[in-house]
Image (cartoon, rainbow, N blue to C red):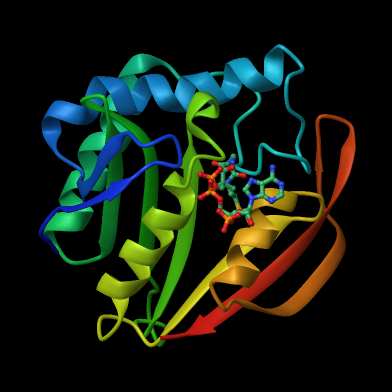
Amino acid sequence: MYFEPTSFKLKDGREAEITDIKPEYREDMINNYFSYFDEVEKGESAYGSDIGILLSYTKESYEDEVEWFNKKLKKVESDEQIARVAIVDGHPVGLIDIRKGGLGRKHIGELGIAIRKDYRGLGVGKALMEDALRLAKGWVKIATLALFEGNKSAYTLYKKLGFEEYGRLEDAMELRNKSLTEILMFKKL
Ligand SMILES: CC(C)(COP(=O)(O)OP(=O)(O)OC[C@H]1O[C@@H](n2cnc3c(N)ncnc32)[C@H](O)[C@@H]1OP(=O)(O)O)[C@@H](O)C(=O)NCCC(=O)NCCS
């Protein structure tokens, strides 16, 4: 599924654009993904606080990530996903995707989002969410997402955009010696 680009302004006044993922963004997007590992490794972030995405214990290889990216492009092409990136200063700095469910769940889209550390708190997450939710209207009926308790910025953002909690599971995950509570949220589109 492909869509028109849209533009928006960061809180610091810079111009930014939101567009579909494209082959030419591959290297930057893989580097963005690897930067989340660096945050965790440097102890700058911890699961359950401001790094809310699931990372494997060891960094995947560049080749694995190329495969991930190419699969993603195909899923967008075959209407299984909406995947949009925010472009600032000519580079993608954040990704949002909405993945259509499988059998019996094709009316449900599971949302995932991550912004590169240096670009958080500037309105990129909100702009990506608003853009993707607008595009997903009519494509799926319900948007769902999961986050870890303690991810304050994500929780605040989702509540602000009308997501409601439908479940909470303590000790849903044990990662890097930390027990995490998972919060499930939904929004009817
Ligand atoms: C969660 C995340 C996507 C938010 O994106 P962002 O670009 O930093 O958020 P924005 O600047 O658009 O802020 C959106 C809203 O979130 C809230 N927010 C942002 N940063 C916040 C913070 N540090 N503390 C509390 N609330 C915060 C604000 O209410 C803000 O709304 P406002 O602009 O009207 O004040 C981003 O921080 C991120 O990628 N984090 C790491 C990965 C992750 O946790 N992904 C979510 C997994 S479920």
